[in-house]
Length: 333
Ligand code: DAH
View 1 (cartoon, rainbow, N blue to C red):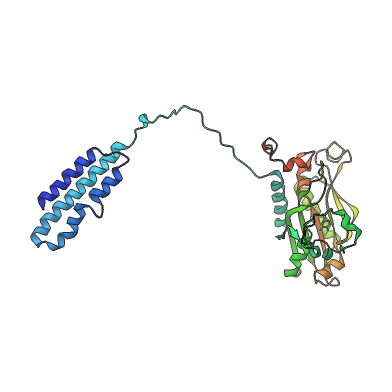
View 2 (cartoon, protein in one colour):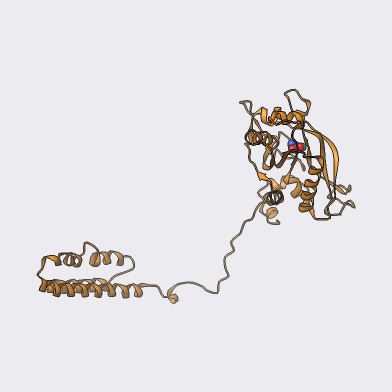
């Protein structure tokens, strides 16, 4: 037995002499692994007499340690030395381009943060809508001329690609009752010819507040906070009467131009004002469609386009830039 163990040690050391990075693992399991000769011996110690067990056991364990140590130092030897590596430590670093959020996403996040700070919840809705949610429930019956305000992509199954985020108002109120205070960001689609201010796809953020005693003053105050947060604290706002079938009265909000402070410049077409969004008090018919009693509750709603806000903020003359994957353009934000 003693002889056998000695032989194992010799074989292991001899084998290790010629070991390389490629086969050192294999060798290690051959000499030290569970099926190695040495391990078989250690396992069979139980069959020996007490005397023998002591002697052989000690020898086998010592041999095991020796082999382990030899492997350890061989591994050290095999490690490449810094000087052997062909690395030029003086070479300049490689440039990795780091991306960032798209300017429209940045503005959307900014807008949502303003509303979150005022206690709004964020709601979501589908981009493929049915006629009820996109039009009818919003007081736009099939033959209503106001449907012409929004050129629609109709799907073959009768559904539509939502033309605005207003249908989320209807969807949300199917599951929630007042008090309601939500904003809903998302993508919309319209069958329009593209030009500097129109695109067949764009984003909107819808807002809806319904509770007892909500007035036009609440709408005005809320939108003033938004305009100042987005365009600067000195921003002034004004309402212009407008028409949307789902609000009565309806108004569009203008903000004083942040670039000329209202004096008139190229960005605002020399008017000093920029159109920001559409809004109004939720129409009683719409409240009824939401199964909310218009004698008990009132509400306001608004819808704004983040592309528009981003274009105003960064003085971008053409919304088509937002949809072109042009890194030179995007890098600027
Ligand atoms: N849906 C309108 C649009 O697409 C925006 C809008 C106007 C939303 C008035 C509203 C609102 O909720 O009250 O232009």
